[in-house]
View (cartoon, rainbow, N blue to C red):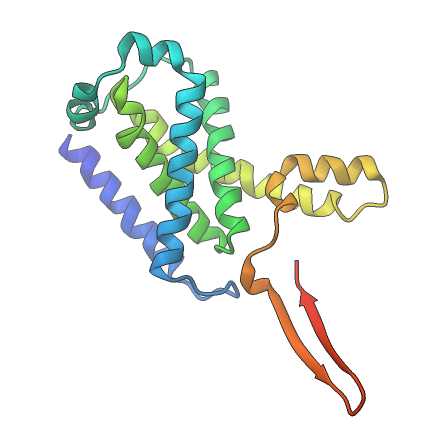
Length: 202
């Protein structure tokens, strides 16, 4: 248990260091971080309640929620199931944080934190935290997310409507309005006219 905590703390500090690198993305406030992390946490609970109804009914307990966080263990899921399921979940965390204007390293750091939140503060309602999932979700999810982000960007620049649709499917967050700080406005005042120039960088 002590070794696991040491590894987790090391990863947290390393991710925090990566996130501190100078990037071209806009700075975030503490409120931004809390809001975005909270949005992912609410989505995690929503998906969990909708997809794990039987598991929750059979094994769910607030006693588990309190007692299980201190008892992480290796789960019994197959390697393939773990890889695909958690890479899929992790890439959505990553793409969401990228959509919110985070750098790649910062998005990885928050994907890792969101993965911890799910393992220790959502899924513990029915089962102990999974040691494999703690690292597989952010690591494989970030790798898949980085690939999908790049392929999506290329496909959305194609002439074919089908290719553009596939690009949006790979990164559905591109369908949402962009990060607010990507929008700029400049008044245009003339002697006999009044207007507004808008710039939207995406």
